[in-house]
Amino acid sequence: MGIAIKKPEGVPGRSWPAIVIGLFVAFGGVLFGYDTGTISGILAMDYWRNEFSTGYTNSDNQPDVSPSQTSLIVSILSAGTFFGALWAAPSADFLGRRMALIAACWVFNLGVILQTAATELPMFIAGRFFAGFGVGMVSALIPLYQSETAPKWIRGVIVGSYQFAITVGLLLAAIVDNATKDRQDTGSYRIPIAVQFAWSLVLIIGMLILPETPRFLIKQGKQEKAAKALAKIRRLPIDHAAIQDELGEIQANHEYELSLGKSSYIDCFRGKVLKRLLTGCLLQGLQQLTGINFIFYYGTQFFKNTGITNPFVISMITSAVNVSSTLPGLYAIDKWGRRPLLFWGAIGMTVSQLLVAVLGTTSTGQNPETGAVFSTNLASQKASIAFVCIYIFFFASTWGPIAWVVTGEIFPLKVRAKALSMTTATNWLLNWAIAYSTPYLVNW
Image (cartoon, rainbow, N blue to C red):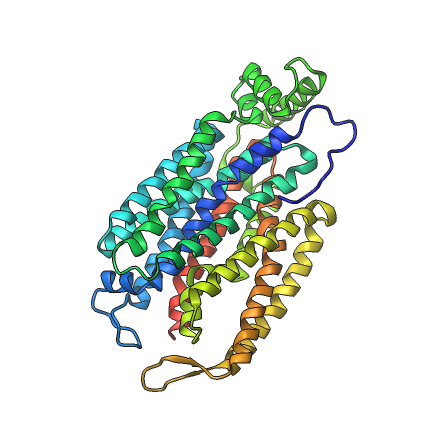
C-alpha cells in the first residue's frame, strides 16, 4: 500500500502474516463501498429510470422515480445496515468472528440476487434492505476481527485499511457504472449489481481459510486452539515464549473481565464504558454528518442536475481522489495521532464545503418554468468541483479511517462486540437519516 512502517526492535516473529490477514479482511469494505457507490450511477441511468418509473416525470418531462421513491431506494440500504450492525454482536459472540463474517456475506448475496432479478421497485427495495443487512454486519465484524488479530504496533493502519477498501469499492462502482450507463437494456443496471457477487465470494473463500481470532477462542475456553491460531498468525512455534506471553496477556485480560460478571448490553452503559460508548457513537455519528455520503449516494445525479455534461466521469474522479487520499491518512494515524488529524480534518472540510456552497450559487441558474438547472459560469463550476475534491481529501485522510480505528480499540474485550455493534449502528442510523432526507432537500 505504499506505507512503510518499520516493526519495532525486539518484537519476535514475523508481522507480515497478521498484516496480510488484516488487509485481506479489510476487503469486506469493498462490499460496503461498492454497494454505496453503485446506486449513485444507477439512479442517473436513463434506462433504469424508465424501467422502474411508476408514472412520475422529472423536470425534463422524462420518466423517472419520484423524490420519495428515490429517498426510499437509497435509505433502505442504511436501514438494513443499522439492524445488521446490531445483529453483528450476538452473531460474533455465538458463531465466532470468522463464521459470522461468512454468514453476513450470504445475507448480502440474497440482497444482490433480489436486486439483479428485480423488474419493479418493491423487489428492488427488498434487495437493497437485505444487502444492507449483510453490509451492516460486515462493517461491525471487520474492525473487530482486525483489532483482535493485528500486532499492536500497526493496529491503527490495519483497522484503518477498512476505510481504504471502502474507497476502492466506491471507485470500482463509479468505473462499472460509467461502463454500462449507455446500454439500452437491463444490463445497464444488472451488470453493476451482479458484479457484487465477486466481492462477496472472494471474502467468503478467504474467511474459510483464515483462522479464528485467538481472543474469541480464549473467550470460548479453547486455549489450545487459541495458541495454534496465534502461532499461525505470528509465524512462531506454538511453545515460543512470545506466543505464551501474548496468550497469557489475553487470558489474564479475559479472566479479569469474567471476574466482573457476564456482559450484557446494560454493561455498555455503566461507568467508564459508557463514556467510551458515547465517544465512539459521537465519532461515528459526526463522520456521517460531515455529509460525505451525499457525494457518493447522489453525486452523479447531483453533478448532472447542476449542468455538468459528464457527471459519470466526475464521479470517477471524486472516487479516485477518495482512494488516493486515504493512503496518507493511514500513515498519519500512527505517526501524528488520532486527535490532531480529526481537528485539522474538520477545519479543512468546513472551509471546503463553504467554498463549494458559495461557488455553487454563482455558477448555476434555474429555469423558472421547468425547474431545470443550467451552468452560467464555467470557471466557478470547475472551481466548485475542485473544492469538492479537496473536501474529499480532508475526509478520506482523517475522519474516514480514524472513526473506525478509534472505535475498534477503545472498548474492553468483555463488551467489545456489543459496543462496536452500537457505534457502527450509530453510523448507519445517521447514514439513513441523510440518505432519506437528501432528495427532499435537493428538490425543495
